[in-house]
Length: 167
Image (cartoon, rainbow, N blue to C red; front, side):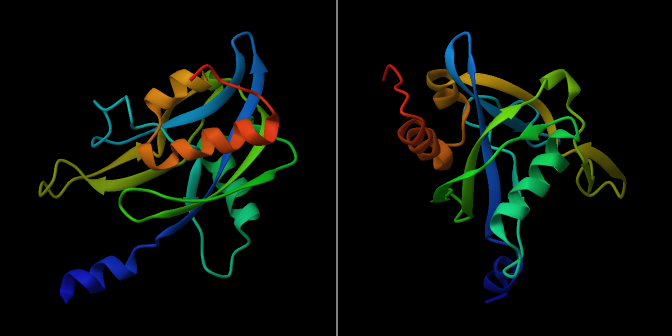
């Protein structure tokens, strides 16, 4: 019962944006790598769309725009958004996603930070960036980098842009 209570306190709803652009390799998407010690040595299957938790009363599109700016910095710009629908990640978190044409130089990344006790049980708190890297990937390479629970968003993006990827 205690584990159930602990789980129920965590937000299980996030909103995020799959930014895209036309690049030299065709359609490219912007993904972010989570910061912090847990993700430091993980790469394939660890990248995500910029996203974050939303409250039940919060508008998902506004939350997605807020998280986009918090995780990338104020230099990130995104145009009109189109709904991509909802996906469920492996841990049960639901992500309401949007797609929009975006402009961002990964070298300009300026993510917000979070504090955790690190190393565990050390009594020391350290600050880490929420996102430690951002990068534009072509669709097929993005499939190797992205969290498995978000892969469907790539197919939904291809459907709304009319693009195709060499699967």
